Amino acid sequence: MALISQADQDKLRETFNEMTSPVRLLFFTQTLDCETCLQTRQILDELPPLSDKISIEEVNLVLESDKARRYAIDRVPAIALVSGEKDSRIRFLGTPAGYEFVSLIQAILLVGGRPSGMTEENRKRLAAVDKPLTMQVFTTPT
Image (cartoon, rainbow, N blue to C red; front, side):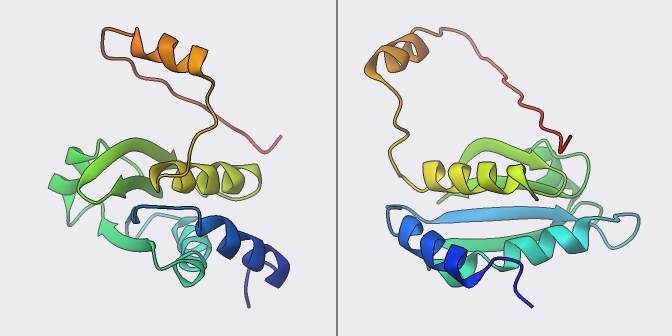
């Protein structure tokens, strides 16, 4: 049974057409001790049929620890968004359900080349940042 309604699938399919680049979702998981990995995988599995520009690569955190370190992933479930060989440095930790699902879709579109809608003024502000910066956004369903 699909988690995404047919109407939402149709809207997502139309929206994903705005992407100009492929996006690979690196899904970090493990077989044991991950209560939400299956649910996360079920959510992710619904996206590739909606666009030929979206693919999923499953990465076992334990067996592929070098790859996990390369993407700075230390827990599961986790998702890293990649375009071609370019790491977007966008990560999702935990299951992207509820409001986080919308954030995941927006991130996929952004990494896939859809314009961000950022104003020119804000682009200039970002361009003025002259040192490495890590920004983390935390969401909760409550």
